[in-house]
Amino acid sequence: MLSPDDGKCDSAPRRQFLWSLPLMLLSLPAQARGLVKFPCEQLGNKYHFMRAGISLLEEENIWSTNPLFLTNREDALSRKGQEQVVAACQKIASLFHLPTVVKYSLAASCIDTSNLIGQELRLGRDRLIPEFTFLDPRAIGRWDMLELQSTKAAVWAFDNDDAGPSGLGARPPPNIDGTPHETLSDQAIRLRQLLSILESQYSGDTILLIFPDGTGPALLSAMIAGIPYNRIHELEFFPGEIRLDVTKNSVLELWKTRQEDMSEYLDVLEEGRRQLAILRKQTGDIVSLKDVKLEEERIAIDKAYQEKERKRKLVEEKQNQKLVARQRDPVDAPISPTAFASLAGISLVGGASLLTMGSRDRDSISSETDDTSVKSSPIPAVESGPNMLFNVSARKDLDLTESLQKRSLFTPIEPVDVNGEKSKSEAAATAMEAYMDRDDGAEDWLRSISEIVEENEKADHDWA
Image (tube, rainbow, N blue to C red):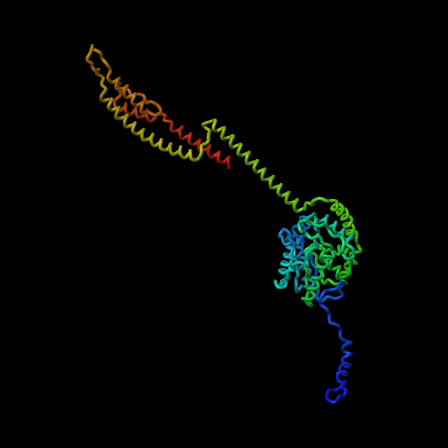
């Protein structure tokens, strides 16, 4: 190389290049932390896979896969699911595999699971990070919201027979309610994006992934280990199950162990093929199990209401019959509270009037008796005429009797004969005693009022 000053060759850059050649040969290439390639030989983070505890819908044997409805509280964690999550937390704590990051789906069961894990393992809220789409379960289209056990077996058989190693086949039939109908390959794309983002965002962390279903973590495990997609259900996760430190070697070892006893899995596939044939024959509208349960609940509510109305009408009919019977018998006929109050008031006023009138009658009787005694005389009065004699005292007694009969309310008072040997005082005492002993109907009146009150209370009790 010529120098610009004297035109001589400068060999310094050439020597530096030759000296750096050994270093260039010994250096390692920079690790690309972009899109993850499967199978994965090495990952930058440690991963734990967990399926959320059993949900309320799963306890009711309903399979829900529509991502729009995953956040509904009807898909929340059940009591049994909470116990499963607590057991998983104890396993994590005992093996000292505490996560530094918890990534969970927005499904209601996953949200509850992550909150419970945060409480049990004392993790801060900044470590509980939601994932909005990449952890969604595989949607099964027209078969969504059907019976969980039979439909799951049919999907397993469908994937095993038709999905293929890449999971491009076995697409469920479409639905009219917007539920996607996905293949295993569609779900694998989301999981590839999820793991690529985590590998780019974190380094050296222990990440716990919480899935709402058992197929998602099984598919991601198969992708890491290079297992054909149509055999992922051999690695299916059960509700609340957790697998720690998932790597290629750990997945292959587990898969090999599962293959030693395939009898139960093969039985599920055989039953699934029968259920799949039944599902394929249903060409019309498929009624979801949720709609069936809602209809059953509505029918039960209607029956309960009708039974309640029937009993109410029966009680009303009995009450009406009793009222008719009482109206036929005036003595037993019930009266309303208002009428009873009016009757009681009138009765009280009438009773007071009777007492007042009785007092006046006694005074009147005494005065008239005295008057009669004075005016009456044993000497007959002589009228002008042809020597006709009349008993004046008899005329006076007759007038007194008529007067007392007009004043009496119940029974007439017998006239008092003062023409005999009795004195005036004895006659007055006898008249007063007879008046006081007479039957004025007070006891009958009180007895009638008591019977009316008792009948009214009994009618109110029967009505209640």
